Amino acid sequence: MSFTPALRAELIKIRTLRSLVGSLAAILLTTVAFSALFSASSDKNEPDQLFRTFFGINFGEIAAIAFGATAVAGEFQGGALRLTLAAMPDRLRWFAAKATAVALPALAVGLLTGVVTAVVGKAAFGDLGPSWGQALRGALGCGLQLTLMALFAAGLAAVLRSGVATLSILIPFLLIVSFVVGDLSGSVADFLPDRAGQIALHSTWDGSLGPWTGLAVSALWAAAALVAGAWTLQRRDA
Amino acid sequence: MTDIDVRDLTKEYGARRAVDELTFRVRPGRVTGFLGPNGAGKSTTMRLLLGLDRPTSGTATIGGRAYAELHEPLRRVGALLDAGAAHGSRTARDHLRALAASNRIPVGRVDAVLEQTGLAEVARRRVKTYSLGMRQRLGIAAALLGDPEVIVLDEPSNGLDPEGIIWIRTLLKDLAAEGRTVLVSSHLMNETASFADHLVILGRGRLLADTPVQEFIRARVQPEVRVRSIDPDALGDLLVRHGHDATRHEDGAWSVRNAPAEELGRLLAEEGVPVLELAAREGTLEQAYLDLTATEAEFTAQPQEA
Image 1 (tube, chains in turn brown, red):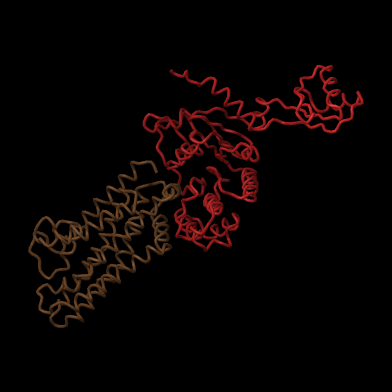
Image 2: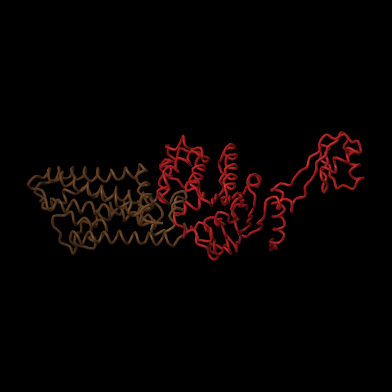
């Protein structure tokens, strides 16, 4: 079994489920809409104009998590995984194809989201807004962070073998723990998967992590979840 | 020539042995019925065969190779394990398209198997709108997708309507006639008898029989001849006089064991007895199976502790 046919199969599976296409659309819509709302209503003299511009990513991340978790969780319903693994018995290769099939559309939509959000923000703030250099970093960071969150959820869903379980852990975590603890910037909270990657969306930062090291920390979280998912898959009976 | 070869296969879940030192071989060109009560280990054996579960010990190979080693396995082996495997929100056609892509099977095969399983008309409807019988057909379509030489189906007639049951019977026979290796599990005797040429019977994870269907029935059930005349008592006397082992039914007919219908017919004609009915009764698979399990129970029954 080779990788390309497996990837094609997994991309077809993603394209042909309305809920997955819907959550991809939700990544774009929620991020752009909440960012625009926030930009329009915030003080134009705020120091961190870049994060004001990208504030909506907090909501986009929820859509990205739903996308990653749902894409993997579908395999754990009604014996779907048995059929999938009967077609693609090399489990690691199959899971790599699945993760790639989650990452590719998430990255495409994430980058588009980043660019649209940046352009909307520049328009809203005018000369007081972030510089084009900052906006570009924000757009790229936004795309990468959304992709990493989708992969983090995909890995976790493979460990828990359930979309509901994954979402009921990650969404409260994102909404409560991160929002509450996250304000204590410069602390351990900076290393949480959703906070670390978002440093790339700030004009300035004062913790031990910068924009790219922050994204690297998010990538480590995603990688850890995927490795744990692959290990579970390899070890258990289908 | 592609055999399914199961050798010393054992699978334990904790302390329970679901499959116990199982050895059998499934040959091409005939339908092999895989029989046993629910929980006998049929589905587990099939999952082990497809490399989905890991055996505790022993091997299961297809054409001499483990399933996981097959390149593009759907082109070699088609399997139906769960009718619920297709995602409810996807259409049947998209479900099969993804499967086909994974093994580089041309899209033309997708439409061909949808046609073959009678799903072409509803192929663009979402699977959640399907009845159990239609899902079962979709599972069979998936098994046939790669035009495989080995076909493994777990309870394929579950949920099928009478028309569907006749359809699957013909399909299985045709597949075997094309020289394919066909293994079909079931817990229904009469249904299995209608399509199987050969039997592999499991009981509590162990092999109870591996034999051609006709041989199995003949070895375990004596054929009978049913005779009915206008005067049951006179008929009875005649049978006893000629030393036949006969039992009388409530409707006045007699069942005669160990005597061919030809011999009885001649005897009754010679004696001038008017015959209303004379029918040879072959034993059924169900009778043979019950005989087998009764013998098994004798050997495996544990003394009850007070």
